[in-house]
Length: 508
Ligand code: NAD
Image (cartoon, rainbow, N blue to C red; front, side, top):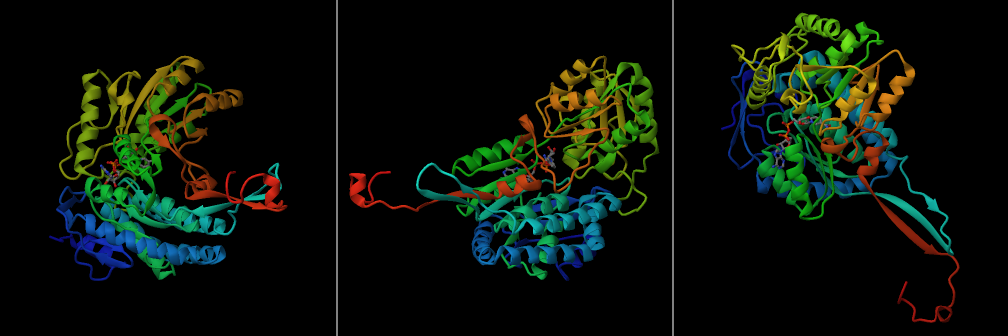
């Protein structure tokens, strides 16, 4: 029990000196789990990275109590005081970007250059929502009676956030910051594969002045620890980021107590390139869309729709770029593409490539579906002659594999883009401004780019259509997700009771 490599021990030791065994972070303390051992492999080698016990029911119950107490203390502060604390958290995070980035790179297998950017974005998230802490307020509504009617935006209380392994620190900041800005406390259940940077953020936040218990990190499996948290009566909302299959299970479990959910699920986004586009720029965009994060991104441009007149040329340009990308050790600053995060996902990505081969796709460059000698690496892969009914075009691969599909007309491009159960993101590359806006208006997607790809910011709302989920994260929309509205009625011209013709206190 409780093993971890020396490399990991040093990285986590920067936040929890001398930590021997991973446990949940509850009320400011590490609380050991009581469940079965969770074994996590190092994505770069496939060898053991760490093992720790699943949290379990008792840890969840203790965290819920800590969160209730923490939320009471936090919500009793003025809104401005909460904003100041969040600014202090942002500064604490900025001071530790390198340590956070190293921990993320070692534990999640992401290239260190990407981890630095993502850790910096987490600091930005706290800065952004710190500014909102005292600026979200209710309204006065001119009702047609003698009443003064106003609304209050109140915190929900304790919210549960369940996050995946592909961008652990980014997703943690993305959900925690708006939740606490609105006076809530959080139970965060990160992926059992990548809990460490979330624990580090929680500890840094407390060092910066956040009361203990406002952010608690539950380390364990989803079907045990996650489900126990969904069933805990303290939890007033579940915000889930992950796969559609799990999202559906979570919404069903939450429905038993009529607990509302936000679901941020997967995607199969169409990146549409017209013949009149600046093809050089579109090529750089198409590569970033699918190869950044080794394609383990919910918004990755995994379907590359290219107008037939430039299809061969453009696909070759993307393949040439893919061949130049440097795949390797996440801690090497030159690495551009890291490994797949875990063995199950690795098998899935390789299996999808094999299924494409079985359906007759051409591999222009990259993996032929054979495993690497060491670690979970998949070379950046470009698949050609794909049709939209093949599995590689319909299912989320979640790896550095792009399926290039030809089209002839604007109508056909839109039809192919929309012929998917998902609706998370998409893009169009064209020199025709009218076409750009027509396509943006017609593709079903919560986020859409014109002559760009993958830019997201905490200030702008994010979420899915259809099987990509519901509810919104980031922007002002997230503040609404983390508050509930109360309508207060004050009688301003009370009549004598007799004027009503019924006894006071009865009727409406
Ligand atoms: P996953 O659904 O397997 O797991 C996500 C989280 O859910 C983990 O914390 C896991 O422990 C937990 N979980 C699993 N089963 C559970 C259960 N029965 N009850 C409660 N919790 C449970 O997803 P993943 O493989 O970790 O991540 C990849 C998926 O996440 C992809 O589909 C990707 O597109 C999606 N994703 C979406 C967004 C978005 O914002 N839309 C962002 C990142 C990733």
